Image 1 (cartoon, rainbow over the protein chains, first blue to last red):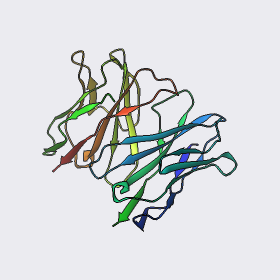
Image 2 (tube, rainbow over the protein chains, first blue to last red; image 1 turned 90 degrees about the vertical axis):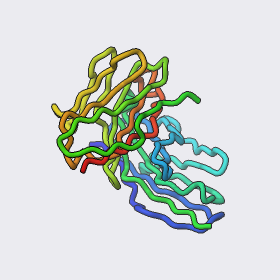
Image 3 (cartoon, helix red, strand yellow; image 1 turned 45 degrees about the vertical axis):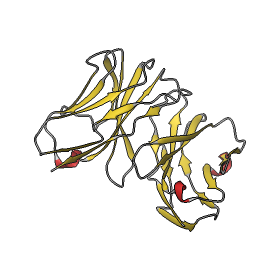
Image 4 (cartoon, helix red, strand yellow; image 1 turned 30 degrees about the vertical axis):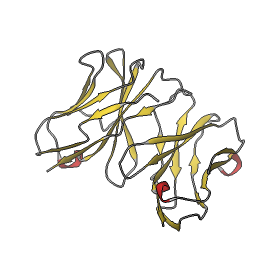
Length: 115
Length: 115
């Protein structure tokens, strides 16, 4: 069965601190996609990243970085020098390689950045 | 970047009433989807739609739900007789194809409150 676990329900940090959001997944597929989405207080789902299971290279985009480790089935997300605007719920998700819409979602981590 | 738009952003209705949630997918997209997120819970897949018919639906999508593409631009989700447990955020999404590497574009959601 496929499953995504985000064990951190809520994280609260002070602005400018670094913060890592954990994501652990389970799948029997050998190839798959992993995603991170951001849901700000306004409610929309904002796509952040998609990672193919073939590609274990870490990725950096500005203050955001992602650490994909197939050996531990983890796809963690780090925000460096956090800002108040980063406050949101962050979802990790998993999909089969042949379907872009059958996403298995984690429960989300609510990130609160205090000024 | 092109957007998926959803109207209304909030909808309040009485139990037993019919509601129609509207979505305008991105114009060159052919695949359309509805998801829902009950407050504090995971995002759940409801239905996928292609070529004017449902291609896949989840267990949640029972006979009370229907989808339609009434014209060349709108994609609607109808709930025939709303129940309290239908209260949720409903997200529309679209994509050009349903290939695994195709990006999903989400709308900003309609918050449905059933009283």
